[in-house]
Image 1 (cartoon, helix red, strand yellow):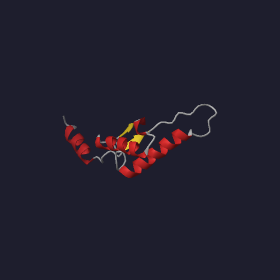
Image 2 (cartoon, helix red, strand yellow):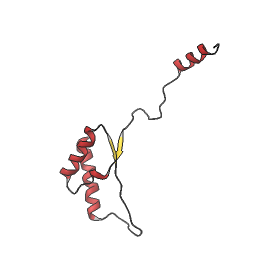
Image 3 (cartoon, helix red, strand yellow):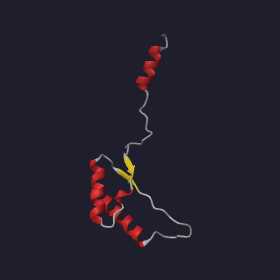
Image 4 (tube, one colour):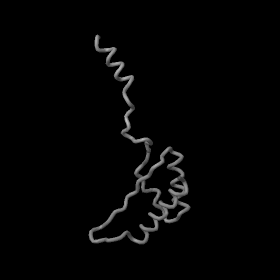
Length: 88
């Protein structure tokens, strides 16, 4: 019990944790934003934003020997990037 006032003083004067940095991002790993059209990608991005997410991670699967994404995959990635820029 004698150490309780000291412990309380230490906790009261402790600096806040900065593990998340100055800003904490809340995101999702969601491939639904990879759409064939920009309009569809914007719609999916808007739904994520309405749900409270400010960050999204997408996946791209590469097969052995591939050196670039397919044209379809590249177009979808481009749509995601453009949609993210529009909803930022």
